[in-house]
Image (tube, rainbow, N blue to C red; front, side, top):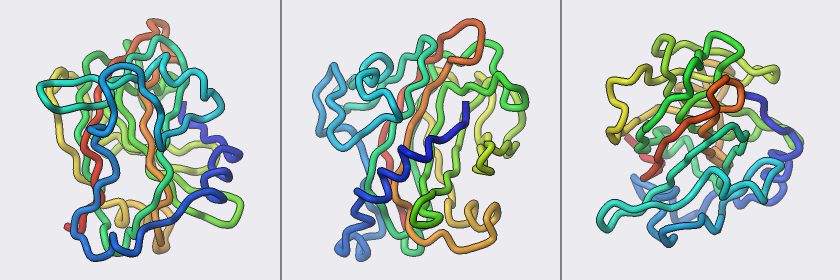
Length: 222
């Protein structure tokens, strides 16, 4: 599913602090590494979900490996879209980096069909106007082609940046020039990112199961 709730993102636009002035001086700006949480139930501090606030712990929890904490997602058919409000200057830090690890792809999912669920997805949210936003979604899918793009009904792009099971079970680091991607699809400067999000989904496929992990989100200069 790639539909975005306008009401949800309008709430983001009215409540968000776009970015900290002190963050401009840093080449690397921490968005989230989950180390402030405790292992177990995800207490949502700073995070929100679209429409289903009470369902966040049905899918997401905090797990650990050694001293490192990360977000674990285990989806059995729910559609629970997770977002963190808080922006940054894309002009100063055009790159988004993060780590993710797919444990189980949603069986039968394919971004080129209506069964376009993904085990791992990351969103970036940009302000479009006073009452609307634009998003770019990056996904790791079991099938398809790298850099394949589909568009939501609101013309927001979903880009397949990793495909297949070769790296399943391994942490993989991604680095994406979100400024370049935004200008490619919308032909204008993005200004500031206002939020980013995560989704592990398995609501469209027959076997409703997808598992993935996420960690170390940074906005970086280069």
